[in-house]
Length: 344
Ligand SMILES: [Cu+2]
Image: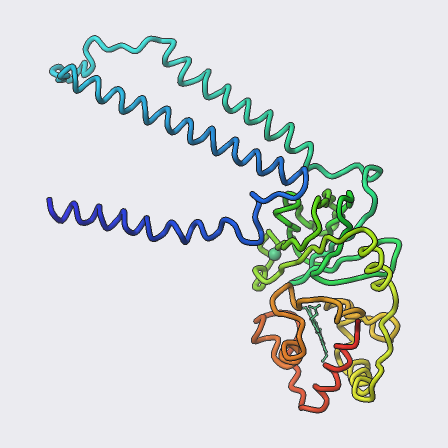
């Protein structure tokens, strides 16, 4: 008896210890329950309605069980005939049909109407005419390229949009299936080879929202994050104008040597820098690299030391990523970093 009690206590303690671990997934920066658009609000409301109904159902069934148990004990029930263990206790047919068929059907139908009809309609691909602008999101193993049709702007992993503006986001892929997901702004949208999928991107508040590839796409899937910078409209327009321009020319002798190294070496076969001869498309566009706050799918900050470490040892920072390590020595590395840091 004593051992039995101890194991139960152990199990409860284990569950209590596990709870904070599970709840650690709630909150934080990718929170579906902190919506900042109509679509995300509807998704969050649907979650609460479903949770409420689920727990209401649980409470109802548990309550009935307890009630049956208590009334039975009070009556001093003892089954004597094994062929008829419940003498004189035939449930009324309307309890069985009503509670077992009609009631669950009504709940499921109500959830279907709220979920499928109302919420799906709001989170659906927007009519192109109802949006103010389009952004192309292209999934790559393992980063996102963002293009602004009608301009030359291309960026990676850091998407900028104006606040209170309906954006038509067109999701495609350069390789395998990925999924574009910014939980605070809308549901997920898969990128399927050969297809264009669309979703509405809208934010009611200026800020930075984190997103993540939400479809397993290989080794570094977990490090395929993104940031959505929601800016006041005039700020956004200024940003877009700057991003559309070609890369600024290097201003120091060191940076000029870095440019030479970049253009004459293997870097330019994988990366594009507009305004130079670098036109690769395997890796992210680096035209305005220095205007980004992070590198490599929001894995590391865009600082001088991380930039140098990335070039020399990206396979250590993001194992299996498609950029090889370059064993460069001091002065050449300094020159490359100086050049990249000037790409504002
Ligand atoms: Cu992925």
